[in-house]
Image 1: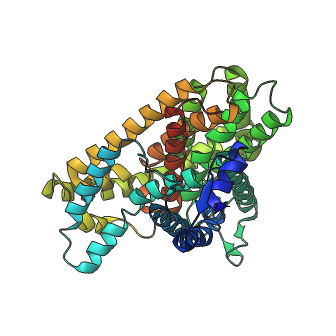
Image 2: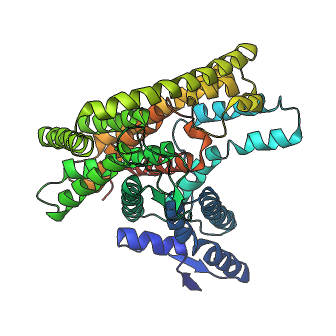
Amino acid sequence: MTTLATPSAKAHERVTGRWNRDLHAETKFDWLIYCIKQVSGTPAPFFFIAFIAAVFASRAAVEICAWATAASTVTYIIADRFAKEREFAFWRAGSDLLLLGFFVVSVAGIAQSSTAEEFVSGVGSLRWIPLIYIFLYTWQLFPGLNRMFYILVGTASLTAIYGLYQHFAGIDVVRGMATLPYAPVTGYAYSMAVGFYRHPEILGTVLAVILPLPIAAFMLADQREKPIVPFLALLVSLILAAAIFWTYKPGIWIAAIGSFGVTLLLQPRRHFITLLIAGAFIAGVTFVTYGSPENLTLPLQKAELARGERQRIEINEQIKIWGEHVLIGAGMKAREVRSTESLDGNVYFQLLAQTGTLGLAFYLLFSLNFLLGVYRIWREIPNTHYWHKVLCTSGIGSMAAFHVAGLYWPTLSDSHALFLFVFMISALSYLAQQYDRGLVP
């Protein structure tokens, strides 16, 4: 009989510093299960890391890395089901019945599709729901919240720096020196930052979701942390904020301000200095870059009026479709009104047209109930648990940013923003479950 060191057991030992998973192999079948776990579990954490990097890269890359992670995790769980000594137990993500209700209503609406291809495409658009649970199980089998969020913030910082370069250089080096669209300001040779994406809305939303992390790290840092921690957190916050600012999308600005406000409300300290730095940063960027606020706001207002008109037309079309399918929506038929060249629209009216009153109600109730559950855990985390407090606090701010950005463009239609949303939900669910079991060391 041999004690086995499975990938999950090694991951838990690395995080907790303790070995508490003595698994044994007595038969050839036990060895077969062990080999399957080794093959499927060893690359899973690396796929998860690659997924984080892919969120800032191409849409194909993020899909491939997400489902490679999912395949590894599911294979590991299936093998574990046949093991004599199991390592895994199923958990709830939180608000599961509401999420199930949204899924059922969505499928019912999609079932109205006229072709099999539309039905398959419609069900595929709901892939983010099972992915929440698969990512949650990945966290449970291969923990390491701090490491993953370090990578997330680091990659976001590099993306933001590239966006700052694009703003002043006006070219996208990654896409073969392509010329970027000019910023909606007259008299200045500035371009809209897009990062590694094709639209500034995507860059702004992704960075706005991540922005609360360094802000919370800065505000919560105390004497027990290294002096460089608050300095680096503040520097990263300003870099992300600058890249968001130079997307020239006021709706994304509001989402970032909303996430900042929520994070600020949840912090017990450094309110004044944080507000002072934020005010000085906005004033400094405005006056140094444009000379006066009017040089920015007046041209931007004209651009937003045109965008608002396009959004109004799209929303009116979606309301018309909803009026014909009030309860469960029109499914894939509602997608025909969505622009493919721009990201004008509103995710809530899109959901109303696609899933009807019931689907939108389930989605909103799920979002609200999930946030309340995370807030409950936030109150239970002691102040001594610095990084857990940072993750939980910033997670609430991140969810606020994502949902506010949905008022400005259909966030659930883009893989980058959607999968980052899934990643945040799964991480917060994992953290909440650990504290539901007792105080985490």
